[in-house]
Image (tube, rainbow, N blue to C red; front, top):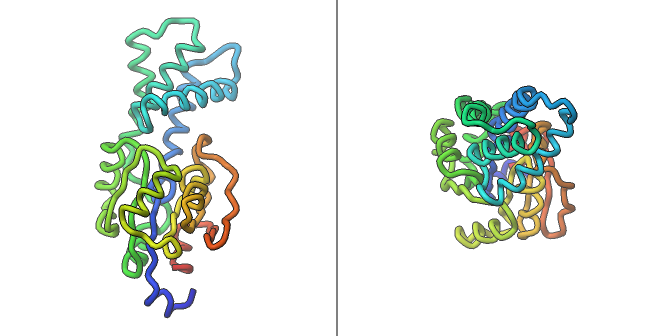
Length: 237
């Protein structure tokens, strides 16, 4: 895309937040490591405990959605399934503490995110599209100081094809000039392409295992762009 096209051909960029703009899953991974160490299971390996936790998390997402409360429930339920000792009030408090310690972390941007958002916002129409608990996600957006770069903030319960279709309809977006930008094949890339818009995949080595999926092949006229870093967006938009 040439400089002239950048100036006179504005796009709509739907941008993910967690692990696209700032670090997120690394804190959950640290909490999980602390939980597995605390559980200290004598028959299950750490990998086996993690597999049980993954299954429990899938169940908790259905019942509690995403976010720290759901994660805390998953840790406690995993303990109940695997431990020979009962889950006392004290133990539950300790286990929930692994989850809620995540909330204490400040927003940690990925490299050059604020500068890149400033560049993009001057040329394009930006909408933040993230999933999770409304209070948690809106709190991170407020603390991040980047809210003004976006014309709208959408915090949704799930990011599937239906969600993307709803957002496209709500903002009357033109499919050929709309892009979803994110790190998750399952939530950011594949459902966006299925909804008929373009996508930019920015891989993150710490992407949550439940977000892993093979990246779909873009069917024309949809386009798929893969970049290594968020700051690389300024070279394409």
